[in-house]
Length: 158
Image (cartoon, rainbow, N blue to C red):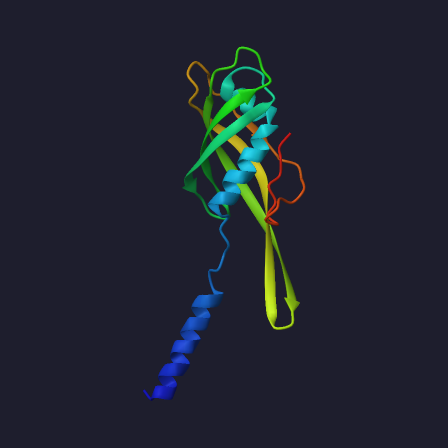
């Protein structure tokens, strides 16, 4: 094959690789920030994790344990409860999450800028590791909220 044919074939292969399978994955920092924000006011999920009624977590440690397809996954949470009586020092559990995104492109001269906005769509408690607490399945759908400073959405939960 000639050099021209090789260049053509390589450019065609590069184009096919660049356009196919380019699904966005929610960044880990967005998962951490949005879950911390959502669990500040998620009484159903946090109460189920602690075994007593509380308003939410004052601070939350988030560790992604499994990533699924289409921006879903499982995260392990350790949170400090606030506004409750007889609460444990910390509550632990695993939640399934689901994210969606929208992207908006804009152009200024030759520069093209794409802004991606992530939304936490689902938060479902799947396991509890807090000593003395039995598991009760709970799911919350976080409502829409304001954009955070990055332009990425980090909605809070009811």
